[in-house]
Length: 291
Image (cartoon, rainbow, N blue to C red; front, side, top):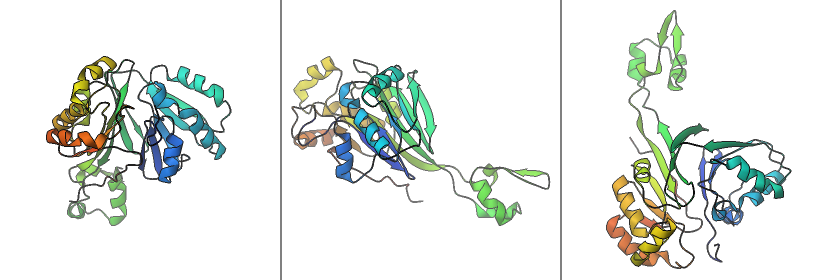
């Protein structure tokens, strides 16, 4: 439930002028306003599952986007049954000036590309169908000037090859791999919530720069409750972060009874030192590694 000092689940990812939302719990609009961000540039909303605490902010968000005179299409991705859920929600948001495009996830693992990013949805273990998401930004290798010069390529062709296009000159074809170095390390973010620990999480989160994971219970003695309700403890999340060799982990999706998450973090950091307690408005800029 939302609390006076804590809204419900939502994650905003911003890249290259686009915004992508994962889940839209009650209070998401307020959280965005507090951060100084606008909902208008959101091009994609990914839903992990259809429990109310993850989608109850959606009708109001859609209406706000419509009132801002948005006309660009909005893509919403979610588990099988998404059109039915959205049709029910649209009963109280019937007239919108933009098209909503639905994309159902029907496989245990399903990927798609959107505005330069790769999204990988993977099934987790909750009491309803639920998915986690990994978002990746690939980074191509360096353009190798010496190779281009050896081939006798004029500078006017370099940019085309850098953009992945083939170039034909006097009947001879030149391909990007002839002048580009090996791909460099890109960026990766993994987000998962409402689940028991699964190997699918560990594999999909592997070497993520940032791993955002549910930590429903901080107390070790709540393990029985975690298993019963298909959630996890802080320590279980830390174990997955360690096994996935992630750069950093944020915990989120706390039980309403958990008031001060930081009280449990010393124990968590014994398992995985680069662990942090998530809080409203927490953000981080991910940058490519320096060569």
